[in-house]
Image 1 (tube, helix red, strand yellow):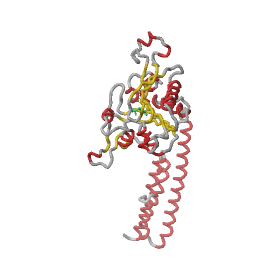
Image 2 (cartoon, protein in one colour):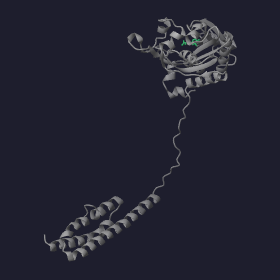
Image 3 (spheres, helix red, strand yellow):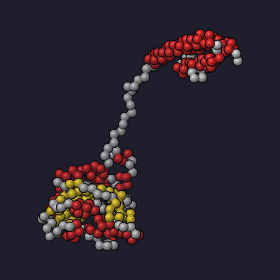
Image 4 (cartoon, rainbow, N blue to C red):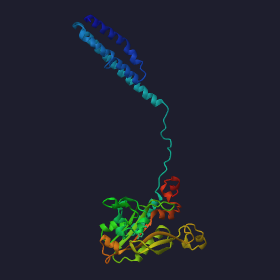
Length: 362
Ligand code: DAH
């Protein structure tokens, strides 16, 4: 290609671009289109850029003139592009301001506030009651050693209670594990754990979940208990009766009656169960007809609420306390059962279904 041909190509290219760019940029309707058209001229693959490839072939005396014209053209395109961009943005802003009004003040949909689960409420109330009496709160692991759940509490090996509670085992020594561990079947494990790590005097309550393989209208494989115990010099059964009677009055009703019946648990001696007068027929009012027709206490006027007793000397020995020096009492209750009695809930499963129609009734 000759030098004069290169000159002619450049001249023609410059003339073409000069003739078309103004119209192209001015007719672009939005920013995208404007940018696309601008790039067709001055982009890396643009026409003006491509023209420059002729430059080396242009004769020396024309180079300066053609180079200057290409530059001027480029500056003109860039100036027009900037002006158009500004105009398009201003127009978009005006359209938004003059367009339909967006009312952000319309009332939203109401939020339905949550509330505490009945078991959580009962737990909080119990911690308040026992806290006011000076009890500390303790916690422990859900998976514990066989020793803490049974042996140190005075259960003899293979005691029927360990079947009765139908334990969920996690690891078993019989199958080669270094320890037998299980989902704790009661919160009495906390008696062992706290006594082993602290010295008397001590008064502790420990709420938490426990696990047994029971499953019916009044039993769930996972449920809640609250354990309590107190150890000091000269603690007597009268102290136990006083504390539990106060608890029943504060939780249920000032006039409630409390009765202690003998019962057996390996870790207490003597051991007992506590009944309260029925909260459904309000048996403390001695309205015999009403009590006779009560489905909850079945006409007896009494409801069983917890197990208790004086801590067995063997338990003290197992945790390193001297049973000649200290005495103490312990009690354990099902929080689910307490919640069912307090709120008149007929089936324990309702507590675990998370049905808001049920839960919003409290
Ligand atoms: N751990 C017993 C159970 O789960 C309840 C219990 C009874 C706890 C008597 C106690 C107690 O501390 O003294 O059935």
